[in-house]
Amino acid sequence: MERLGKEAFAGDRLDRAGTWVVAFVADWCPFCDEFLPRYTARRPPVGARLALADLTDVESPLWDRFRVDVIPTVLIFEDGREIARKDGVLGVGLGDPELDSVLRSVPASH
Image 1 (cartoon, rainbow, N blue to C red):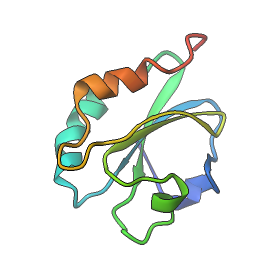
Image 2 (spheres, rainbow, N blue to C red):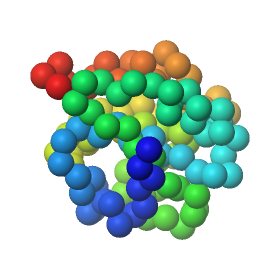
Image 3 (cartoon, rainbow, N blue to C red):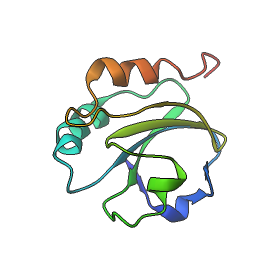
Image 4 (tube, rainbow, N blue to C red):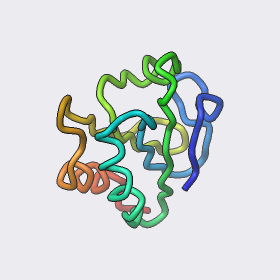
């Protein structure tokens, strides 16, 4: 799975064509540790790719660019533009129902 750093983004856009499901995570986050095996085991929607955005550095500009307050948070990008998101819940993280919900928001044409 591709791990994206700040260089993979241009402003508030992902610098990639196509549909991408990107989980914003950090190495120090216990909720991310619990979430990652479930996320990486998921089959992405047809035509989409899964990736991780690394927020391990608390000074990363991605926190502010994408208004991430809680991790993990999942954003879906289509041709660089954010089209959907599901934010983690403070003290809880992101569960399977929430992950499934955001994955269903990938446009059906894919």
